[in-house]
Every structure is written in structure tokens, then in C-alpha cells.
Image 1 (cartoon, rainbow, N blue to C red):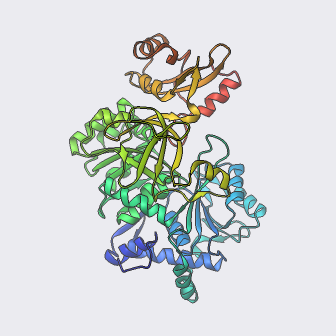
Image 2 (image 1 turned 45 degrees about the horizontal axis):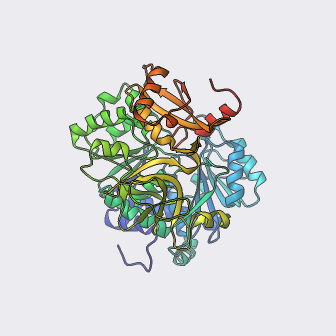
Image 3 (image 1 turned 30 degrees about the vertical axis):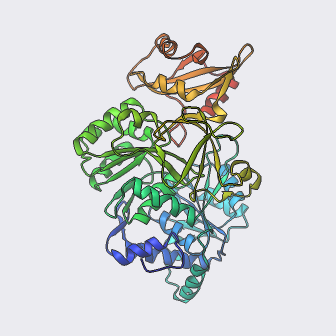
Length: 530
């Protein structure tokens, strides 16, 4: 890389545009861009944002799913010192209003249609309601008062070349460049702010632990408001010089076709995506020989997933890797290691990546010895700058020494590997005893006929709270309440055994691949669960 005064995200596009200008960088359907073209598109978009009046520190938002314009606008915003916000077309108008009101973007780039749905009325409503929006840029047919991406962004604007260079020189490593909103599982979503420094610090380690090379080809079908798209896969391929292959929705059969056709080498997904692919008739005829690493996070891997991936990996010697992370820490911070056995991959989330730090603490934030369950705290340059517009909530989770208290519970073994026990907000007391739902869920999911389990706390007059277990059987299987209760009684103390078992063919799921426990609790509160 040509020496820079600082290490900034878009510098990696410049690096690969110099080193392999004709190498493939971005693929979306029939649209293929080389690294040289990727860099050129970034500069065109950056000049377009300058022409629209985007100032240093302001926000550029994109309402879309994964496609080539996603990393182009993302890196272009970074180059002019702006923050970038990804929005999904799956959001309702009210959800879009909330995030736009909080982040106040100066420009909105948006697709006109998604899954045959015309977003014109939504875009019109947002343009009319938010005076912060200086320009709405539409991929597809523009609405009244907007401009077409193809015309506005791809205009040459040579007169702005000097202004772009000057703006890029102002950007500092600690400038905010990415805002991602949390899922809102404990209230209103919070905008997590990351900088060039935090993103690069995390992905530098990820590239090492995933053994990424400039020859890798990664499939990206996550929503662009997700840390997997923005950092773990999207920026990792940019920094590592690989190729990003986009899909604007997750379709099990189509994703299998793309894996084979595009010779994907790195496949990172949440467990439910793998499970849906297993159910597709094309799974067992798909050529996975190009894949060198299957990677998952977000939830524990059920036994059937490990069995089938183990079969595929045995054929082509691919690695299986999992870990732990969050939006606030910019992706993975723990990783399993090469050679880890199946039990380790199923039960743990690996160990902290060096030189990052991790400790397990009690409610008073005192460090606990190995083997004890407590809150995960982590420290390192990967940490978010804070929650947007929420200094008190930021101070509540980041202490003066730079430790971030995650709200996740785990224990750590002598190897440093952590076993997730759930969220602090999910732990409950029954008859004075602490119950960790994840322990019960893992036991239930060890049953050959169980795919997913979720244990939630329900108020009880006698015990204060008791656990209800919701169980989703394997496709085509049936499982009885009596055998599930017997399994629990044979393996754990009586107070941990759920007081009710509810078996359902389908459970509500979050985009992260976890069961939506808030939806289950709302059902219970409304008296709808049976």
C-alpha cells in the first residue's frame, strides 16, 4: 500500500485497485465490477454526495438490500467523512421514521422496488417529513422531487476532484463512519457508532482467524443494516482483497446455485440459514468443493447442522468456525481454532482473539474464576464509539477503563473458551435459585427430534417465576412432552425443569436466527399460549 498518514477504510479499495485493477471485486447478478471500477464508482458517488451538500460528520443512508451500490455508497460516505446507515426495505414506515429521525441523514439512496413492492409512497412520505434530507437518490424510476442514481451518481463532475481530495484528507481514524441499530430486544433500537479505527482493528484479527486471502470469494445475502453485511463479510472482503457476491434476499435454493456457480470459498451464515438449505432438494447435489470455511454465529449450532456440515467438510476438508460477538464490538471477538472437536464447536464460542481482552464478572463487575457463570466484559480497539445521541446509556455499559459490559452471560474454561448461558435479561429466579435458560435450551436441543428450543420466564405466585419451554421439532418429526420432561429431570436439578412445555411446528424467529422470545412473552401476557 502507498504510505498514508492514517489507516482508513477506503484505503483498502485503493490498495487492491493498484495491485490487481482487473481482479473481480463486486458481483450482483450480471453486474460485475473490477477493483479499478469499484474505486471509480466510489469517487463518482463521493462527488455526488458533495454535490448534494453532504458535510463532514453528516449521514448518508441507504434503503436497500445487498447489491453493488451498497459498498460503493458505504465507502464513498467514508471518504468524505460522513457516517453511513443501512436500512432494510423490510422495515415498516414507522421503523424507518424512527431511525431517520435519530440519525438525520442528509442523503437517502434507495431502491424503488423490492420483491415486487413499489417503495415510491414510502420514499415520498420520508422526503416530505424530514427536512434533513437534502437529496433522495433512487435506484430505478425516481419519484417526484428525487433524482435517478444512474444519472445523478454516475455524472463525472471533474470540477469536484480537488474538493473530494481535500475532504478525504480531513478524515481521521476516529471519525464516525458507520451506524448500525441494535435489534431492540430490550426496548427502542439504539444506534451503534463505529469508526474507521474500530472496524479495521476488528477485521485485521478476523482475517487472521478466518485465514482469509485475496483469492477468497464470499457470499453476502444479509440485510445491509446487519453487522455481518457491513463488517464481518462486507468489509472483510474489502480489506482482504477478496470478491463479494451479493444476493438481495436469502433464498435457500438460489443460494446453493450461487455457491456452486460462483465458486464461493467462504460461507458465513446464521444456523437457521444452513438449516433451510439442508431442507432444499438441491443441497445434496450442490458442489461445495470450492468452500474452504463454513462460518456461523448468532446462535448455537444444532446437532443436525453439525452432522450435515461435518459430512460436507469431510469430503472437501473445509474448516468449521464459530465465535461470539455483537454489533457493539464490530463483529466477532472470540473464535474457535483449527482442530477443535465437534463438542467444542457445538457448545462453545471459542476464545478471545489476541490481543483483545475478555473477563467474566459478577453483578458488581468483579472478575470471576473459570467455571463460574457471569457477564462477559471485553476490551479492545474494536469497541464502538458509543450509542448515537445516548451518552448515559453508553456510560452505563463502558467503564472508565474501557471495558464493555455486554449483558451476555457465559462461563470460561481453562482453555479460555467461553460457553454462552444467555442474556442477563433472560436469567430468572425460581424459588430463590438462578436459572439460565440457555442451559435448558441446549439440553432440549440435544434431543434427536428437536430443532430449536426457547425457555422464557413466566410470573408465578408460588415460585416468583417459572420457566416455560417452547420446542420446535425437526421437520417431519414429532416429539412428546413426557419425553422432554423426562430428559430434563434426568439431567438437571428439579428447579430448572420447565413447568410447561409447548411444542410448535414453527416458532417466531429474529433476523439474527434466534427465537423471538419477546414475541413469545407477548403471547403469554395476552393469554394466547397453549
